Image (cartoon, rainbow, N blue to C red; front, side):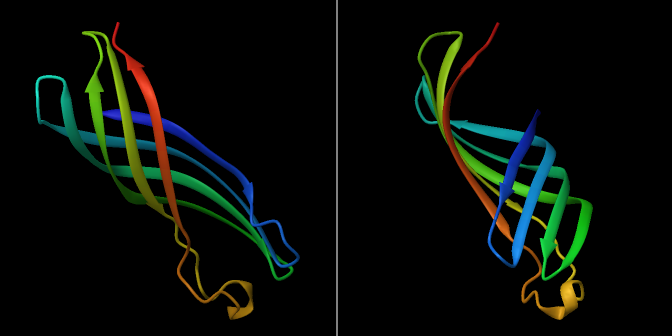
Length: 121
């Protein structure tokens, strides 16, 4: 199991739309070793988010829970140090009836890619 706090800050700053997304996620992760030090993994879980949207002279806040998925690769450098690269997809929901029906989808997808090191104590 793993959890993380996500802060996408403000984005979409133009004349009609601006928004901010903050979330907390919890996921189960399954790893398949390819060699003794290299592996691939997938993860699935849920994230609780607060999505503030200002659009077309209206403001809405969506506080919901949605599923997310991710996948990655890792390489064990030492017994305690592992390098990784991963991709995650998060989807948030917007009610299309809000904003005077000017929104044409049910919400944006947020894709994240990251590389890093993890150290096991």
